Length: 426
Image (cartoon, rainbow, N blue to C red; front, top):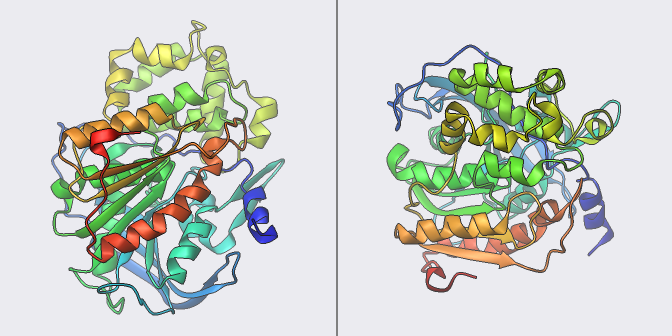
């Protein structure tokens, strides 16, 4: 590996375990599936279409035209909301097969504040938050590679930070809608050179892997008009309770778990009294202090208890609290992937020793999709060493996932039959 790439990896320390949420006005809980009140993807505002930016990468900068989009979408209960996204149009021509495609990119977690949203981090790349946190926009590596091939990218913030509300980390429907509506909005953007029939690839890793998986599951129901050629799902968190199980007690995860709970409380108001009763003063303080923050988790490692049993009045870990509460259990179960099969071909990458998004859960997800008739390729990578902590196997898996996904994407755009290994999952 070249020294430049080593520097990119080194800069990742402490950034992939962050998540986002907070407390907002109580939404109206609707039936499942939700009754959508607005059609998503309408452009509310488009700014900076003439602004020239360069996307840094190990091979040099990629010139691109950047457009900040505010577009319509729906929340998890079908209520209308607005979302911010960033559209990046490379100056390089598309030389691949067929018409120029669009990559709808679902980003990984950086934090809950507008200061570390993708639309902000794409401009600053690295953000220092005193006393000890460094947030690095690691998705820029993947975006660089995609833009270098001449493919435009739209990256959603999952939320419009200019309006009340929170980025509800690992919410299945909200994040899927935001991704799908980012593609809709971009295809409607005047001057983009794209149209309603342009090929779309959905792409994500970690939180983005869950969001891209959810978008794949809901696309036929929510945005059937999109010409989705493929969905890349990297290191997916199959459900937020799985994330808590894998993360509980590990260094630097206190804000991540807190943001999950803040998001659940915001989206499902009947869970608030349960959390108020179950959390002790320490747990409540961690949730409160985590609202509206960015960070890599380094500061919290030294000042907050990482074991969630120390957050509760009963001394039980949060997973036991969730299992013991019908309200919490229902809310968490609604976020779990695997309830429906994607219509488009899917590639799932999962490191066998992933310390945060367990391989067995990813394999079970693929088995469910295969049983539903989806065309799925599961790439089980045993080359990434077993590591945990601030920089673990999950973080390192981002790089081989990125490298191996590129040929798969090009083949889907060329109309090559999608490879499937449902009959013999690794």
